[in-house]
Image (cartoon, rainbow, N blue to C red; front, top):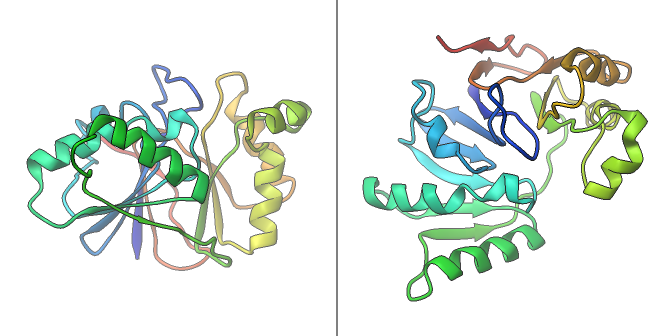
Length: 213
């Protein structure tokens, strides 16, 4: 069983309700952070966040709202942690960008990083994916390199996942409309909100997210 904690579910700019993208995946005391938008450390003030056991960061892509929180996080972990290096995973272009970004900050020494590539997985218990635009704005989504809710739903159906959680949500749309569009292609859809926490015990039986108290 693993647990998902949504630390930031917004798109491009933060709002009072949604921080920039960040998702903590926990399993057996080990943690992987998926994306690290600016302000992710601020979310650590919430009781649902614990950096203990954090071994890896997986970056979905190189947009600034997904990577700018890395430097602050690494600096803080460097002060607090006693374990091994922090692994950073992503696509080739993303990792190239991150290496240049971090080297500009630490020119005389290497940041505590281990670089690797991550391949996509089919048949997952749960899929967490962006739904920044609605299909009516598909051209704009393509211009900005983002997905529509319809594309997210089709991808979930094609990948044969159990549950679909939508994040990276824009304030220009109503959340119910985003979920409804995705459900046209895949039935098991939930909208993620900051500090939602859920457990995924087995395929197709992921719990409903509940806001942390």
